[in-house]
Length: 121
Image 1 (tube, one colour):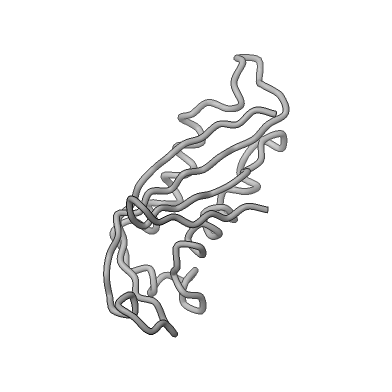
Image 2: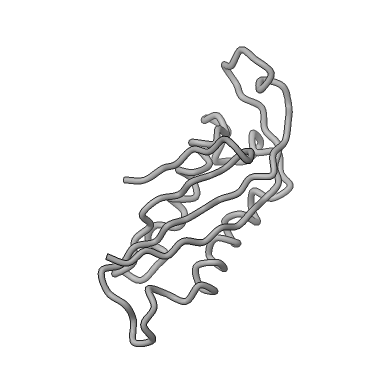
């Protein structure tokens, strides 16, 4: 099994509903998203997939989140825009947009240097 990992960042604000603490107030993060892709085989060039292809797909998803108030986005109208849910949303948006032999193994999102949450199936 081969793995390929990429990272991209975005800035966004949110507040947590049904939460008792400082995070119930509007605040922002410089989020870092790390995606791990898997494949059992390499392509003719000896790669899982070209880094620039998966970076572009991730950039398309994160551009929707960048410099936004996450609570107002359709994806988070009903769900809290927690780090866990951001990871799941990125995972779901990437899955199925790749060649069938490549899967999204995990999405880990960092809301700070020391705090991250991951989503994988």
